[in-house]
Every structure is written in C-alpha cells, then in structure tokens.
Image (cartoon, rainbow, N blue to C red; front, side):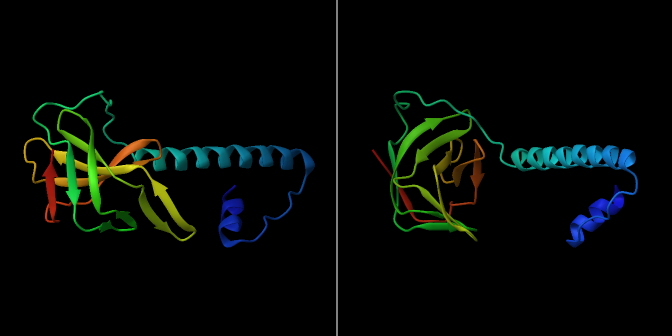
Length: 154
C-alpha cells in the first residue's frame, strides 16, 4: 500500500502484483483507500467554507438603510467586488447583508468564475464592513472593507 501511494505521487505506475489472489485484495484495499482519501479531502474543503446561514425576509428592518454605495471596486485576493449600489438583502443576529449589483468575479487559473455575494455590515459598529460570497453552498465572509469609501442610502 505504501509503495502504491509513493509510486502514485511520483507519477510512476505501481508494480504488478505477484499472485492473483493477493493482487485482487490489494487492489480492493487500494480502491477503498482512494475513497477514504477523497472523502477526507471533500470534508476538509467543505469545512473551510462554513458561515452564517440566514433567511431572506420580505422587507427590511425600519432603521436599516436600504442601499449601500461603493464608489470604487474592491479586490480581495482573487475576488473582485464591483462598484455600484448594493441592496439590502437580509440580516442575522450580528449584522446586515447587502447584495452586489452584479456577480462577484473570481479569477482562477482556469478563467473567471462568477459568484453571488455582496457586503456584510456589523450591527454593533456599522463602520465594520466585510465582503461575503457563497462558496461550496455556504456563506463565507472575506476581507475587511472598513477603510474603503462607501455611503449608506435609503
């Protein structure tokens, strides 16, 4: 088993099995190991993308500004948040979510990926802004937009 993974990592095909009966059981255990490794990898990837889940009520709270305007686009790593008017979308116990006017663009080695997202505003301190995107089926907050130029509008 150890030699199989070493050969796999080095890009060489594994040696052929000596006997047929032991070869079949070794192949089955190698296949099972692949499924375990793939399952662990998927669990690790999906655990990094957890976030707050929130419902989308039909109307916003009375004291919350309905719009937030960004004068310039904001980039965080490979994500690019567009300039424009962000609309109030929903809230959770800690803050408000404003949806982007256009999809968030993520640049990857394979090309551009368009994601849903926007800007998150902290309830306790409305000067604390962060970006958010839906990633792997969950909401992930990204970056610190507090020093960027923005304006609340009704």
